[in-house]
Image (cartoon, rainbow, N blue to C red; front, side, top):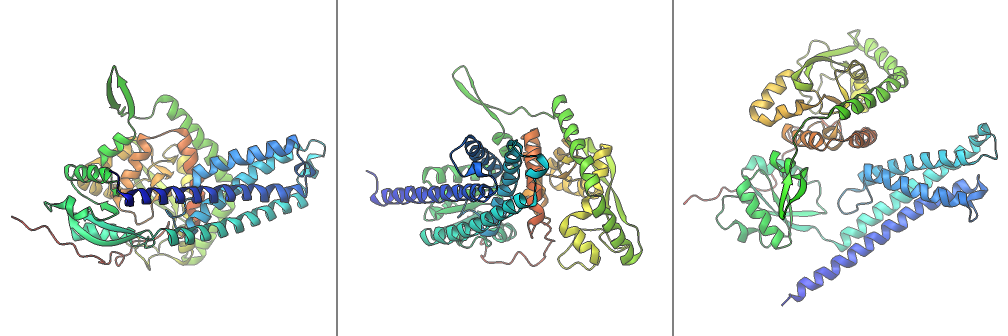
Length: 467
């Protein structure tokens, strides 16, 4: 017989789902309405039921869904408010731009130079301003309402050491409204399943595969949320295809490099973007060069040997952001080696502009794993043998690890992201990551340096007692 408490929870979840879906629909319709109302002041065909109105509404909806899939949806409760606002604002900005261009093209009854007059642009800017205001209100209101309805989940952590505990707590502690960590357990505890059964959410971090599988099965059976860090075989499994051979279910992982067609398309995309980008960014490059030269009179460019496809060594170009003749190592928080103009160049990613030359030359691709220093490749490979798999594609200016990670993301986590990109490669994925890179520049923590004080002990790990 089904427990009445379980039925009650199921009803609550259904009500929650209905409420959030309803809010999403209202928000997306409001964004579309703001565009149609404002642009209707300049284009009267949008104020009545017409073919133009129908086409514009359909275009806005389709393009908005496309860019929301790139930047992120209205996923309140899972992300903080500011990242959601940034994602929705970027998606809406590009949606407005595409829909506006289509509207101007459809206005064949007016000269094209008149269609792009200042008044029309002003209404577009007003529409976007209203949309950002709506996004902000809905996001903060939605998150506040979500956490009133849903209290922090009772959480425990299963791991292998205090060091691993500190690493995962650094992340969990940023989501205090979602998770309430109350206990930590050594995975070697004999009664580990009994220990975790009273918790809603279980984090499993750096636990051997056999024990992790046992915990995952238990959580699946008990309908508990579980988070665990992936290993290489998990990535292969995620990207495998389901095959039914006769009546036997199989997963097929076709591990291979990029095909000839994929390499051709990737190179064409690189040149299509890098050449115009180099021309457009020339003014920023000149300004950066002048600022660097005026600051200390030293060289404008920084060159360093890095590894790319199949371990080939090349020289990467950057604008110099550090003082002359200082030790070249990872940047720490408050690092005094960074010059005054260097701080701005790093924060805005302008220091990366010279790498467009590397892309045009063919040493790098626009999207791919970031090229590591040769000494780092050797050191990381000794600790993580899978690190060499990153060299199956060209190094990139941006990539999955740069979009989703941070400057201080651990080498293993960056490796996981890079392997995910390689094993799930498509030209559409490259285009998606290029658009997402725009959002990275707006993230204040994307260039966050290493902070030696960030892993503060909030829970104490107690090793399992030996027999």
